[in-house]
Length: 157
Image 1 (tube, rainbow, N blue to C red):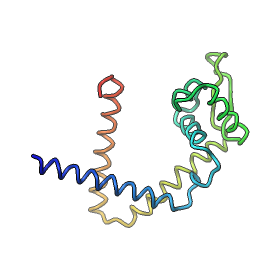
Image 2 (cartoon, rainbow, N blue to C red):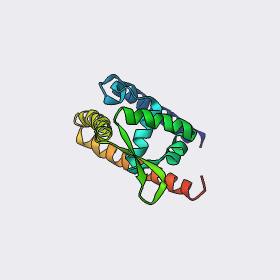
Image 3 (cartoon, rainbow, N blue to C red):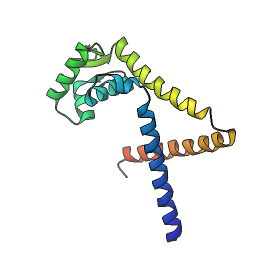
Image 4 (cartoon, helix red, strand yellow):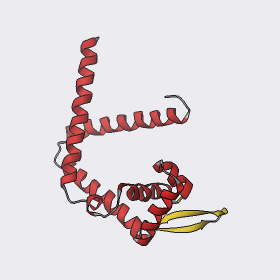
């Protein structure tokens, strides 16, 4: 049993190292993610807003693990840079919601497209058998990730 356990640990280590190596290779390519002047927190705000369509200051504070005052400063700078705007929540006038502007949405799309294009170029060089194996593996990873997330929402880990 330990041989199988050792083999699994070795495979997991190799896969993880390979993924890190891919990340380093992708980082060497020109990407709007690395060429923008955004801080990590500003980028997180943009991505949270992009995923949710909009977010309140409280939502953003919780997502970033910071106080509301910190979020206000981050959002102020993003408004000045033209990436987000603030609007009154139509359901609760006491709440201000942050939304992406056209420039913010374009930045998110540019970041996503750059990564997809790089990945697509790599996939184009793989043979069909490898693509079938990769399709099977990535679907299995997605399914396990979805199950773990669903289990986490239910309170168990």
